[in-house]
Length: 390
Image 1: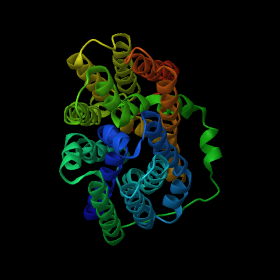
Image 2: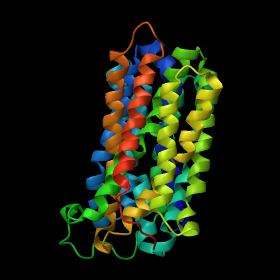
Image 3: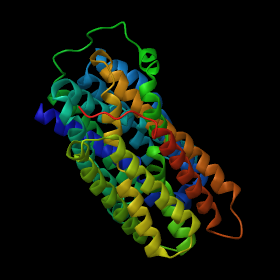
């Protein structure tokens, strides 16, 4: 089981990388194949949308087929094939197609691990284990910052994506050979997603999950690059350094928030506090959009740190799911997160196009304001949730 979890963690490292690396390659992709900021926003949003839609079949597959075959098959076809298509791309639509395929491949990586945690480990340890997996796998977020900029400068972005394709196939094989499915798959089969949706107790949690990941995931995944380039004239290497700072903050936040529910005896108030500070940080950045590079990076890092409550929200929702719906329950919760950011990221591309003009900062002011207000509305709804601590 340990070897299998390590391989699933490596798969999630790839997932973290693929959702964030476009921010660093934005300028070179525009130069080489004419991919605009709106093109990349669409491609990034498509990654999240495909990822989100796949949560439903992935949840069923985890409950009935098991994590080993589910994760290995999709990772090989999607991440391996998609990154190869990306490496060969000559037009923006091919980048979008590749990102959609990669989203399919990455869709089971984290949920396969969470499924094993929920079936094989004590419930009280779920949030800590989930945060540990997410924190360690966030190495992919780091690799998608400054190291990617260096790799692109050294061997080119096509060779970089080709290497990632080979790595994806290798990890998929490793998952197939080492992951052991939990002892009890299936169980009661008469339950369905409708049974989960009939539970009003999870609605406020889903509402927050729809907007929780969008500010940090969308900004870190794409907009931090064009923002720092257009407003402050930073080079690709400097953008890589700034994204590295935000990535480190997100990782530290994940490790910091992971055990707090057990230490403080509450999940709800840990989650609410973190997301409130995150929303206010992004809102402050939107209001003071030209306050300087240092202030901008500090606010983005603060948002990344305080917004890293994703695994605790998953744990909060999981506490209300019956055992036979564990796989579909956690994947439905994840669908909210990924579907929310997918839709919001695609919409942010339209905002960027609509507000382009004399002021270079105006599109980013509107984008960051949109993300901040959406998160704060989600926090207000989440206030009505019921606490849970296993």
